[in-house]
Image (cartoon, rainbow, N blue to C red; front, side, top):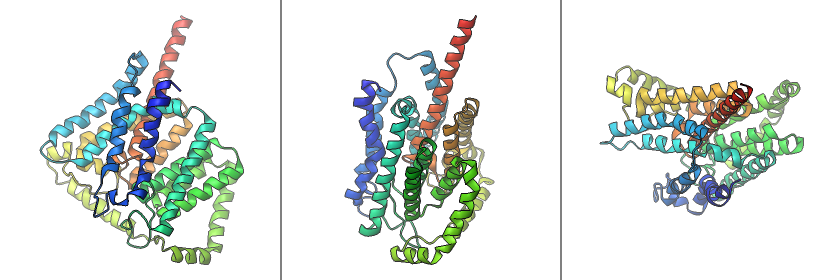
Length: 379
């Protein structure tokens, strides 16, 4: 890495990722606390962004870097124009979305920071263990908040809420499995990830991890695992039920899905009665639904949804064109998460997604530059 990366960006990058652990020392700062309502810890991510942004863009900008930067100009411009439309009202959701977009500028740094396969494995291993340890501690010492489920304990973890923590764990475990070839360590990571997902009660995280694990498994193992795992679970149902009751974990019912379905249909019905301005620029500054696309529609309208989807499709196109398999898998994981969460405006998942888009666009620009150089040399 460059000296700038090592001594300036990397320390703040790690604080940006890990500062949620401070909620265990200062639980009153958590947004669900009646005392704090969201305190100084929540502002650390913004401090990290402000401090690192000047270093993320080099003073001497090459043509490929300029092309990479120009890609994000229109999406940011759309978001800022919407801010003007909402200037007389406090649209915090749109602000969160706009700030998360600055995760895009971490793309080239992420490529340098995670350039070593061994480092990626170790980073994921340490991160998963820390998340597991912190989330498990909530079983014995009490959680940051008990407000995330009406039917039992859900460990919030260091990423604000159970779903965020579940999504992060599922993605980190999938990345580890993608790179690691050690069977014992893969099994250990799978166990830690599964236990963490159970404690968080994140159905979204479980679905993402199951889908990613199935894709990453060797073809000869896929159907074996599909048969063995359900069979082992059935054989251990009594033991699992006893363990569930001892720790009072969240019950897995269809209630949350039914509530979400009712909310979706109510919002879709509301969309048919909107004025043209509300359709184009949004109609609500409060969160109405746990679905990224419908959530964006409510606080940013069609203009925000279209700008996001276009960027998303272009990034996916480059993944397919340049055979970026891991980036493509991560796009799939984030898409699954967006079906049941408001991911693009949340920390750290929204920032991670914009960083992923940045990586694909940056690599595409480098590929085009090298292709153009080769063509000139040939001519």
